[in-house]
Image (cartoon, rainbow, N blue to C red):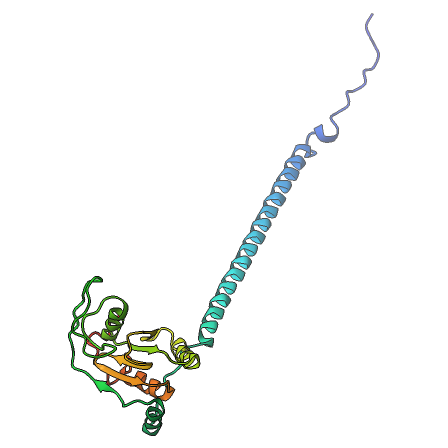
Length: 231
């Protein structure tokens, strides 16, 4: 017998699976949106990282500049002392006070460089102002050859030694040497430059200053040092 019951129609697709509703499209769009937001966040983080890097680089550069400026400032805070001029009257009075007969000029005794085991035989003043040179006093003669003024002393009071030390220390880096030397003929001070010598019974800073002004390279107009540009 034939089935005469009326069949119910099958329900059509619904929800996300229903054609034409755009279910898969919305999913893909959502995924794309998440990817775009992630890329934007990464770009923002990278931009912030670059800003931090530039900021710290700037801080480091400013700190370095400040440090260099501080070093330069501190170096200028205590510059070498200037060599003041000495008037003829002050020099004359200073020489009288120091027991000086003035500068004596000696003929050149040569300027051969000798070995450390050799002794010079051609020095013509005490201390020498030219001649063979190498070690100890020979080294000081070598300094004079290059335009130095050498100050040596023997048997003077400590306060006078301190005056000389302060004068030389204030001119650190100049062609100026101070040293005790037992070879002096008598107690006192000797101011020596190439071929020029002044001996003092006691320290007078006007006399010392005037000698330095005249004979210390580069400004000593009376210097006859044969190698003034050598160190």
